Image (cartoon, rainbow, N blue to C red; front, side):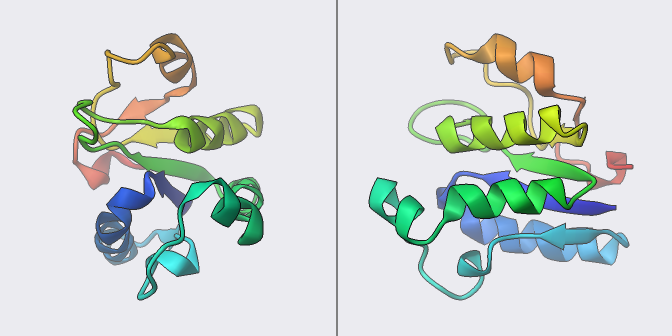
Length: 130
């Protein structure tokens, strides 16, 4: 399965690790090239200059699914931020499966939207992706 890995850029090291695990399970994982070896650029200016939002939209359209890496960040358990929520929306409206690594965060105002778009919570078990 072709899977775009999504999540906060703070989780970029984990993205590379998960990419390698998915490869070993026979999947075709996709992460942005800036997450491998380069320091990621952040903020609105970087998102425009480097086209991150459009890149993710295109990657998701050309995938079978996304895997959201939702680890703890900013005091929020299983964090899903604005960009990742949009990426989930891209996947959802394009009929792609949406997998979450960890349970849905309950302490965010957009919890209902996350619940509506999530197909499977894998709870750290990548073997549940199929």
